Length: 193
Image (tube, rainbow, N blue to C red; front, side, top):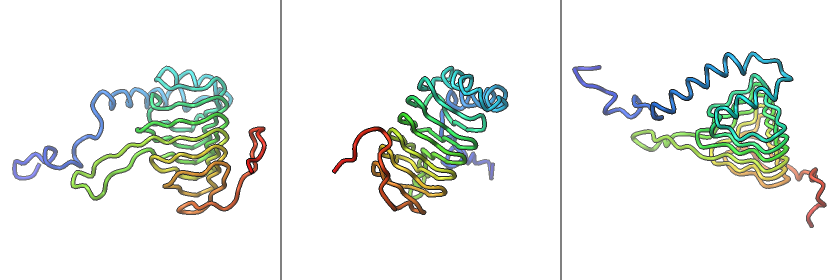
């Protein structure tokens, strides 16, 4: 406090972005993650999926979520069947994340579902949904930014960053990511002409 002035009432950067209830729920989740999720052996995927479901996640029947994966808000996570969220990956999902079947989020990848409006005086918080289609692959250390749709079968190469949606069955690389080649379909459907 400076000169008897409460800066938190005037300065938006000093006010919490999230309501108290959500902050408390996140605190409980962080404790559960630290005590019951993170220290589990790698093969205990079913146990970690149970914990995520207890916190409201909609998880497909056969998912592979690694113990070092960080999920910001399980209640905003939806996965279909046979989804992998790899070691040291991070799902920051205040706007929600939906992962299609056979999606792979490789080690160290970061799904970033929120940003701030840097042109706003209040530095407004903006959360957007991230979605992947079936057979999408977010490679090691790749970054997906808010609102991106990774089309069916798309590949975001290692270390690539995408602020824009990815076309189906296309491989992307670089920062910002650009298409570099087409990917052969792996879903049993013939190539489209």
